[in-house]
Image: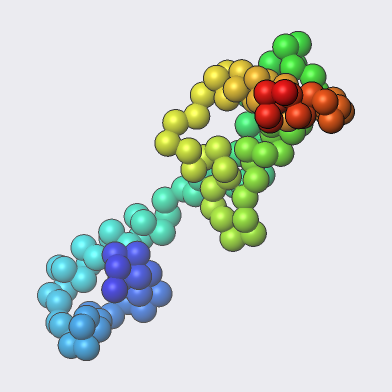
Length: 133
């Protein structure tokens, strides 16, 4: 049983007995009151921002780069980095160990030149590139 489960149990079922490793342990009244106090502090702790609020903060932080990047590129960047699963608590950019928006946008811009190159390649240039002919 982890600490959160223990605290939840104390808040929801204020008792002086709880199960631990299939044994019942008795606590003194002082210990019970300390646990209840700790649990109430834990329960009343303010929650962080929702994913939607954090997405909005991220959008605001990248919109200042608009003059240097097209709206389309910024939208692609935003969509990619704010991606998250249905039950995820974090977006893609929040899972990164380090994330500098300016540096990531510069990399995004450099890579988009490679990704966006839709030039048709002739058979002759393919042969030259592949075989050195």
